[in-house]
Length: 313
Ligand SMILES: NC(=O)C1=CN([C@@H]2O[C@H](COP(=O)(O)OP(=O)(O)OC[C@H]3O[C@@H](n4cnc5c(N)ncnc54)[C@H](OP(=O)(O)O)[C@@H]3O)[C@@H](O)[C@H]2O)C=CC1
Ligand SMILES: C[C@H]1O[C@H](OP(=O)(O)OP(=O)(O)OC[C@H]2O[C@@H](n3cnc4c(=O)[nH]c(N)nc43)[C@H](O)[C@@H]2O)[C@@H](O)[C@@H](O)C1=O
View 1 (cartoon, rainbow, N blue to C red):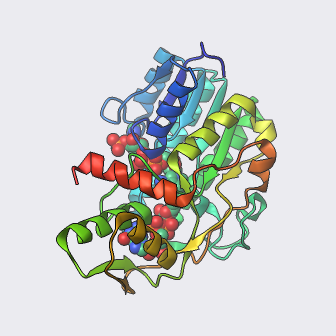
View 2: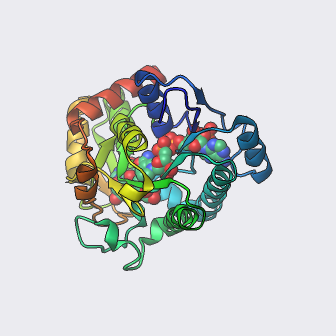
View 3: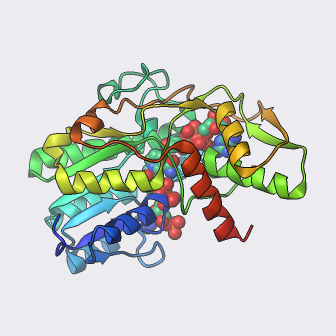
């Protein structure tokens, strides 16, 4: 990726997209093209075709998607499969048609079987049934991986796929119904602290385990791969994670400590646990030359500061 190359960041206002913008600007890249969702709906094939023909980017980070937590996925399965299939299919095909030099597609760790061996290796894909709460989203992401691989095979494109673990950080979604666990707990505990509430509700049993990667580390991994590796190096896809996980109960206790909430955690068994564990094996990623840097307590602190800045809390 040369400084003169034109770079398109799809989803540039999102958690990963905004982190990519920060990382690219820090890296000296200034030839960056973006479009907001309102300016360019990536579900619209004609609009995407016209955009690529007009802008002709050299590199594409595909960080636009319909994204949400376990309840959002469980509530809007049609939205998650339809919107993600349309977005990724339009962008990947337009990248091929306009001879994009390199594209990076972001999948998700939910693509793995519900009961995959832990930690999950790339070879475990499609070896078992998926987690029902997010199966439509996972099927869309698997289709994206397979589409990049198929285009690389048939058209000799250079389209890489990465599978991020659970992400959190600056610019996260704090909607209490549709967000992921980390931003939800940050907001719930902050608001409980301010109100003086004695309890905070934590969804599920607290026993599932999750791995968390800070968003700016995710962006750094994406830029590292785009600068230094190609689809031939990564293979069909590569896990992006930190290589360790904690229980939701432990996470809630750590968020409470960072936020300064000293009340009781009440576990709401009416909400789904989802996959019991989805720890990524990051051996392949480490061999490619990258590893995560931001420790969890530092990351939670930065995310909490961002939440308070953005919501005037
Ligand atoms: N967050 C996480 O824990 C994880 C995320 N990922 C993946 O990482 C990538 C980035 O996720 P993340 O940054 O968290 O998601 P966000 O929801 O923060 O950002 C997604 C971005 O995509 C945009 N977008 C959505 N639909 C469209 C559309 N039809 N046309 C144009 N733009 C659209 C959104 O714009 P707007 O908000 O205006 O609609 C938003 O800016 C996604 O592929 C996601 O699947 C993978 C694993 C974990
Ligand atoms: C990234 C990943 O994200 C999703 O999978 P998930 O990791 O299961 O999602 P989650 O972060 O929403 O939940 C993790 C765990 O946390 C528990 N939990 C407790 N309290 C709250 C809470 O208040 N909100 C939420 N959302 N979860 C809570 C919750 O019950 C569950 O056990 C999919 O979108 C999937 O497609 C995907 O890609």
